[in-house]
Structures are given as C-alpha cells and as structure tokens.
Length: 425
Ligand SMILES: Cc1cc2nc3c(=O)[nH]c(=O)nc-3n(C[C@H](O)[C@H](O)[C@H](O)COP(=O)(O)OP(=O)(O)OC[C@H]3O[C@@H](n4cnc5c(N)ncnc54)[C@H](O)[C@@H]3O)c2cc1C
Image (tube, rainbow, N blue to C red; front, side, top):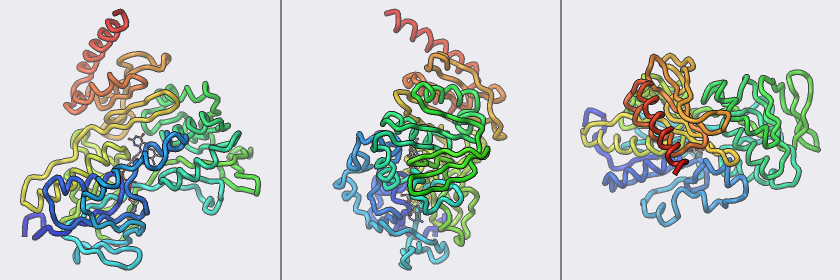
C-alpha cells in the first residue's frame, strides 16, 4: 500500500456530472488511466455549461446543444460508465463504496467528489409556481418560458452576479424588472460596496428598478402571480420571482461520511479529503489557498475546471507514490451584463477576511471602463475590471507573485501610455 492508502487503482468513481467531474474524467484518461471510470450524476443531462444559463441560453439566443460541454462523440470517447439521473446518497470510505439513492453500491479504489453547489431558497416558497432559482438547465428552461412572454414583470431577489445577469437578460427581453437587495449595495460580497454600486449603475440606465437596503418578508402567490411582501409592508406583483441569494455546497449526501464538512468539503491544498483515495474538486471544496493564506470556497468556472483536472492528476500521482500539486492558481470570474464585461481576479479581502483597500489603476468607474486593484499591507490581492478585458489578465502574474501594489501601479502606467498611443495612432 502507498502512503496515500491506495493499494491499487483500477476503478475511479467521479461523483457530480458537471464541469469539475467532466474535467476529472478527462484528466484521468489524459494521465494514462485505462481502468474503469464511473461518472455518477444527479442530473439526467450529459455535462453542460452553466454560465450561458443566465446569459445567451436564457435570452433564447442559444439552444441546449450549444451549451453541451462536450459533443456526444467526444464524451463517448472517454469510455466512461455513466450513472446519470441518480444522486449519490452517501460514501463509505472504509468499504470504499459510493451509495446511490436507489440503493446501489458503486465500489471504488479512488473517488473524486465534485457535487458543486445548489441555490439557497427562501423559506415557504416550495410549491410556489412563480418562484424560480437558476442553477440547472431545467431551471433555465422554466425561467426562459416566462421571460419570453411579452411584458412580463420579473422581481429578482439578490443583486449578486447571477441576479444581475438575470435582470439584464430579462430586461433586454422586454420584461419590467425590479431587483431587491438587502445589502447597501449590489455585488458587495464580490467586489465591495463602492465598486459594486459603480458596476451595477448601468442597470438603472437600462430601466431596471434596483433597490438596495430593502428587506423581503416573504413571497406568496395567487392565481395571477407572485406577491412579494416587503419588510415595510408594501407588496410587489410579479409573473416570476427569481431568487438569487447565493449557493451552498452540495454536501448533504456526505453528512454521515466522516469527511470534514464546513460550508464545503474541507480538503488539503492538494484536494485530498483525508480519506484514502478520495479527492474533491470545484464549487464544493473548501481549502486554505496557499497564495492568499485564507480559507476559501470558490464558486467560479475556471476553478472548477482546474480543480477537476488537478484532483484526477493528484489521485493518479498518489497511487503511483508521486508528488502531489497544490491548488494555488489565482481565482478568476467574469460576468456579462448587457454589453458590459466584468472580470475579477484574486480576492477583494485582506487575509483576515475584512474588505481590502482598493485603488483605481486604469480608466474610471464614471466612464464605465476601469481596472481597480485590491491590496492589503501593500500587497496586491485582487483586480477588478470593467470593459477592459485585454488589460485585466496582465495583473494575474502580479497577484500570483504577491507583488507589491507599486508593481501594479507601474503596470498601470505602462497600460495607460500604451492606450494613449493606441488611441493617438
Ligand atoms: C446561471 C449561472 C451562471 C454562471 N455564470 C458564471 C460566469 O459567468 N463565470 C463564472 O466564472 N462562473 C459562473 N457560474 C459558476 C460556474 O458555473 C460554477 O462555478 C461551476 O459550474 C462549478 O462546477 P462544479 O462542477 O464544481 O459544480 P456544478 O456545476 O454545481 O455541478 C455539480 C453537479 O453535481 C451534481 N450533484 C449534486 N449532488 C449530487 C449527488 N449527491 N450525487 C450526484 N450528483 C450530484 C449536480 O446535479 C451537478 O450536476 C455560473 C453558474 C450559474 C448557475
């Protein structure tokens, strides 16, 4: 038996048939693993991409075939045993078996847990036919059917990235849109209050009624639609209420597993869970990010893709007695709203989780074109960009190198000069 507790690796079970799970399967094959790979997924669909669900798919511009993560032949060529449409309900890390909700046992030598996250819901809204969340293809199909109707009224609860994307798409489709946010500004969690307000300002221009610091007391319904009851006693009528108040990691099925769970599956930076041969990847993982010395759970596409591949590579390495690699890349997320592209790299917080200071590096929020750097103790921790995609990514190596803010300011000087030269010539 190797130090990792794996004495043979002939069967790998990947739980979660989405981005991280698919990337894990692909990396197993790319890493030369020729044994059995079982992909267990709660959804019936083959892996598909979620970001378009609030953008081009919701707008009706793309169909379901366009969001498949792999074309059927590429997916088939992986030679997987697929168990789709049935969730896992537990894992026995001693007997090394994943238990399915239909009672079947799926034995493994190695397992990769990639069950992602699920939307938080409002109390007492189960069974309200006008209340939507947006996580799955089926959710998006249901919401799209409402938005497509002319003149509908949509209330979005929560002004995070997903809520604001839904607001933008619904507004462009002709809906009347109200966004209700309990915090003092939109996008506070992602980018902080001041820049959050700047980023979301274009919603007002588009005719979205964006209300902050408001409390929703509940959502009822009658035959005509939803009734949003506000904390101040007022009511809003809607044909659809979209609840975008965040997600929680899909760990309920692991409650009796003995794995360490704390708002996610707690792993080492190598994504090892501590149980022999069991790794985790994607939205579901909580780990101490080596670069930021901060415990994080990242709900971004690139993190899920990278960690899926890394978990597989580390599983293969641990079976071979090799070196494991840590998950330490700079987190990256983007959001498209109307014709604006928001990008965020790294963290907007200091090591203790308090908001980091920020400074505009290039452009200006007023012009809706800027790059801002977040810093703590003189070190660059994150970068936010609006409508300057070519410039933002250049800061990634600086964040990765824990560069001083001065280096970011120097890069910004270069970028401003280059931009003026480009405009002049
Ligand atoms: C509408 C929307 C828009 C987004 N837009 C962006 C964007 O613009 N940029 C960005 O960076 N990120 C975006 N994201 C986030 C990004 O899609 C996620 O970070 C990514 O999907 C995470 O991948 P994952 O594989 O870890 O988890 P998930 O995609 O959540 O997949 C987990 C899978 O596991 C399945 N599962 C859950 N429990 C079980 C179980 N017990 N047994 C078996 N299977 C189970 C689920 O059904 C699901 O299919 C968006 C997400 C949504 C929903």
